[in-house]
Image (spheres, rainbow, N blue to C red):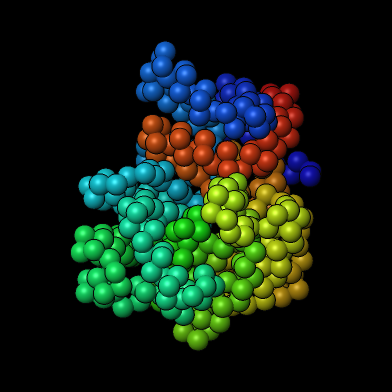
Length: 411
């Protein structure tokens, strides 16, 4: 990969040194895997707040925008200079109180407004940040009972005509029904703010014990907001064995409804958890056994997405895999899809694959960096979970060290 740009040029020598340190530490999978007990041990001596502050100002400065709207604005400005957009992710998982979830929603609304002055900004949310986990699990069971299979959710969403009575009739308690309606209200509020400020709203994928309900809620949002363009994007995890069927029935539903599609295509982040749950539960794992199978499935799903891509639709090709990126370029060229104006974007994680992102931007492809931000006491646990879930990808940070050293030599 040629050095068509200097994506680290804006960083100070101290920031580059920190980047090398964090990249080196991240290249040891066993260290990432055992980070939880190590942090707990250190917290016993120094306190959780001190450890969160330290990690926030080292790893947090590499993989996130920081804690505040000002930090976020600064990071987005630097991405704009590099001709790259963003996918903003406010990290605050595990909240259970209505007040806390309402505060999260307001923080995401604020982030959308911060991103307004920067081009090509999207926002990603986890439905688990705006509804209690147990309620979402119950909704997932109800959704699966109605749709029979996860792939059939789009044409049978329980949320399309959602009222308190109908939810109670499905089997929810009155409190769960109210929590569900508040969740839908928060999601709609965020969608409206995105629409008013020229952003896209990406609904992140989650574990299979949530995903049917997540897809059902996404169908509810897309039916209302994707009439003119692909404002709402659902996330398809290609490590799922049935992901091609899910995608096929999704596009069928989109055409029947006369909507614009919105898809973020990923490989998947919960492989080890899904395999463990399947083993403990005595059922077949829903994910591919081999990475090569997931890779082939991703590329096949990518082909299907681009074949069904229409004007004003949205597709985020979220991958660090250079073979998949080259495949996407070839298919885009075959279907004569414009690099900047077709609604197709490439997504990569903030703090990683800087040269790859710069190369794509230099070739006039639209690049968005997935950029978390939020209070360090919640952001750091989130980043560690992501690192553990995607340890193979994080270990690739070793390749970035030589690129950073090259930048230091140019000083």
